[in-house]
Length: 404
Image 1 (cartoon, rainbow, N blue to C red):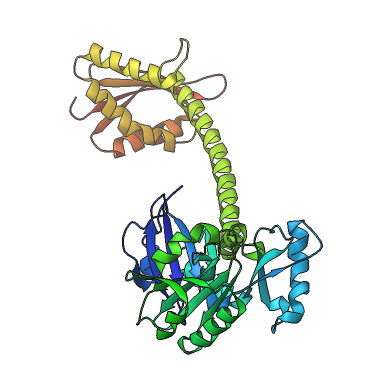
Image 2: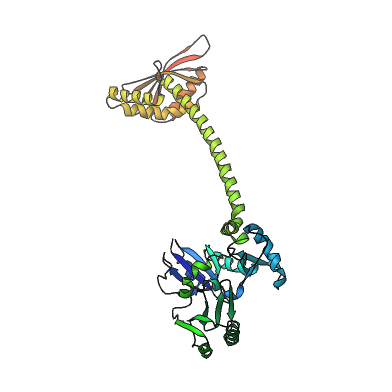
């Protein structure tokens, strides 16, 4: 079993708490600490968290109902106890323990408002408890004896497995007299003195007194196993419901986030489809440019083949390849900006670029020449211009850079 963080909520402020870490065997690893819940939460990581709530806030009793089914008993018990309770049962939470040999169900009754307050305080500091237990049931009890925890501000008396009372110091003598009178054989007590002085009236009772200078949590740690038989986290306060309460405020945000993710995915899909179309169109254009620049031959990968052809030209021209690339870079935009021009061939030799093309008419060819000349640093000579049967002009231009 994992290590356990045992927290005791104190009154009247639930933000104040005592805590102690228990090893796998249930023994305290160090002394108990008193502080805020936020300080206790720092020790919760990786540990099982068990919370003890004040005994004064929880009524412990037993009740018999005509069923052995736990779910049916849970529904019937509130009505069986209704006449004994001062509050409306709709405002109370009923937690059941294991059915005993006499056919009765141990029951812990607590106000729903108190349960809500405790859990709200715990959740606020990041604690999701594994168990919430009445502290009275964690007071050790052996057969034939009772347990009495004496603290500075009060006492906790447990004389039956499923019965306990939180008492003020001034009422203890009268209660003890009543217990002694009810038990002809007397009553044995195990007394834990966790504050103040030993009362004089204890001399009339057979008692074993044990000081607990380290606080009551060490005492509760020894009786924790039996207390866990009646966990308050049942029904609407089960761990599943706790998760639901924590996640409920985030459901709308999560739904919006999911919608955003779906919309983004659709947009990305549409964008991907558009990019694929653009990529296909660019591939077609690259292939067309390659065919114009290097007519003939089989086309497999236009880009790679273009690079191979350019490298071949660089090797053939022995250093003037840079002039060729420079001319191509300068002329590419001019050809693209002149409508009616179609390249049919190109040849670069000795610093001259001979371009074969067809144009709509002589004026288009002359306009192209002027645009190339306007680029600066280039000279253009129309080598030939003939009109074909389709009335288009077939021309040949020789273009030379200024450095050539």
